[in-house]
Image (cartoon, rainbow, N blue to C red):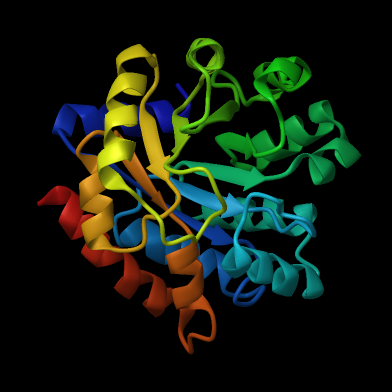
Length: 268
């Protein structure tokens, strides 16, 4: 089984919700990425989403956009990101890692080559924001073929409040690992989360999804994480964590201090 499947099965058996932090690889420094990943795992992260820096992150708000710009200026390309995962795996063989980013850096390598390199580095899933499920066949085939035996890489799909019922049925059919539910129509980091509307939509989606559903966008603290976890199988926190790491003297300590209250809230 893929590490993502194993982790969500464990959480279900324990009656717990997944905490999925997002960080941008290469920010706040090239040297900080792997220590921050370890700090997050030790502070209670169930899955780590590692952002692949990109010059035009259309779905991201200013916090993550600036984070990507800083990382790219330091030379944090896709090769660096895979090196980080490889280094992380030297100490942590269990925490799932999902690469989150955009098509362009992947297409430069080609789906097959990328899938093989990612799997060998220790990546468990990939979320490509600008890859429509209707056009993802080549990637699903490559991920299935090049995952390390026996588990393949998972292609993580996105659903949103504007997703039609017909498209949602397609997403639920093709979903692997978990389905990422975007809690509102907009960019990351926006302060417009309506937990009542989002949880109602989540309830309906979970009734049809064959995989766990994790909610992201707008989750910034313990209270919003706990509120969204009522209907979601897990919560994703990104912009608020990226902002907490920006300028931190000790990024690993800052990651720990940020994540622990969210873990406690989800477990309460």
